[in-house]
Length: 332
Image (cartoon, rainbow, N blue to C red):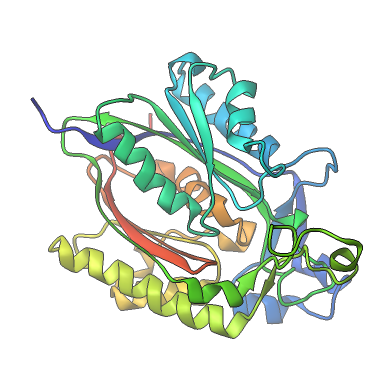
C-alpha cells in the first residue's frame, strides 16, 4: 500500500471591501503613515464594517471561493477545522455554523484556537486526519474579525490588525507531496504579554470590565516582538536542518504576516533571497488566523508542483512553529 501524505489541493480567500489606510488612522489616533510603515510594513488593512456579521461571514465567503474555484461538492467534505481567535460567540462553535451554511452537511467541524498560530496548528491537524486514512477531504479555514477586539484608541494595537479569511483543502496524495515535517511549540509565559484579559472564566464580563476596555486585545509589543523574532527564526532553521535542506532548496517562505521586521529577520536567518519570501502585510495587516492562507491565495499562481515551502508563525500564548510542505499542483 502506498504511503499517504496530505497535500493542499485548493485555496480560497476573502477580505472585506472597506480599506482602513494609514492616512485614515492618522485622523483616529496619534500616529502617522511613515511611523506605521517603518515599524510594521503595513499600509492598509481591510475591515468588516457590518455590525451584524462576524468571523463566520468571512469564513463562509472564503470557503465558497474555494468550493467554486475547485468545483467540488460541499457534501464531499468530510470535516472542517475552523482556525480562529475571534469566534462568533462562546460555546456555539463557529466552524459548525460555517459547515452548515456552505452546505457541508456530511462534515463534522470544530474550532481551533492558538492565536496567530491557529492556522499553522490547523495544518498539522488537518494533515494528520488525512494521513490516518479516515478522511479524504478536510477543509481548513483561517478567519478572524480582529476589528471586533481592537481598541481604536490604542495606537499600539489598532495599527496592526485587519479582518480577513482564507481556506485550503487537504486531500490524500500518493506522490510524496504535501506536508513533510512540522515543528510546533508553545510556552505559557506568553499569557502575560498578549491577551484579552476579560470575557473568559477567569474574569467574566461585567460593567467594570467593559468600562476598563478589558475585552480588547492588549500586548506588550517589545516582549512579543523579541519572542516572535527568535522563535519563528529558530523553528524555521530547525525544519531546514532536520530535512537536510539548504536555502537553495527552499522555493518559498510563507511567514505569518504580523510585522515586516519579524518576516525579514526570519528570512535573514535562513539566508533566503527576498524574492523567495511571500509578503502581503502591506495590504491586509495582521489578520491573525487568516494570514497564511491569504498569502497562499494571493501568490497561488507562483506556486509550482513540487515546490518546497516553509511556513512559519508566532502567536499569543505563546504559540509558534514551522511546517515544511511540498506543493501539489500548478494553478490552471
